Length: 178
Image (cartoon, rainbow, N blue to C red; front, side, top):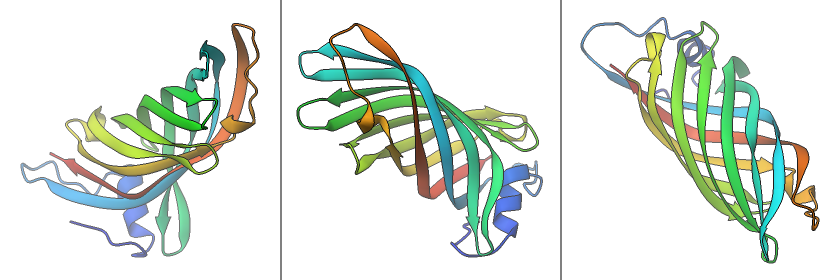
């Protein structure tokens, strides 16, 4: 079943708690629009003449967009690596996320993106599985991540502790539960 944007409060509750999904053998594809406001903590290091690398984790609440506005659906934790070309401002990133719903079920994902500072890093998120009611989950969708990482200055020193903030959003995240 595909849930179009603006269909109300019910899609968020379905996704957040996943209690509406039958455990029968028939799988159904769901589509949601979601976002996360996150904080990242890690190390920023100069890794080449014109390159800096952030290695850390992004953590924040996940919200599902509904007709009545955003509804909290859980939390995400994403270990990530971001490589930044300090001359052009371009960046590439990879990561893995665990999204934990309000009832404790978890969805596991892989992320890859490319982009430019201030504009964001856009790419693909792939659902690789889950546990609890999300066991066997598949799917994915395009996402964009924006951060304050561009404000960090890379010094000649080996590395520095860094805290950054940002937003990650999925205009159409599709997933299938067995």
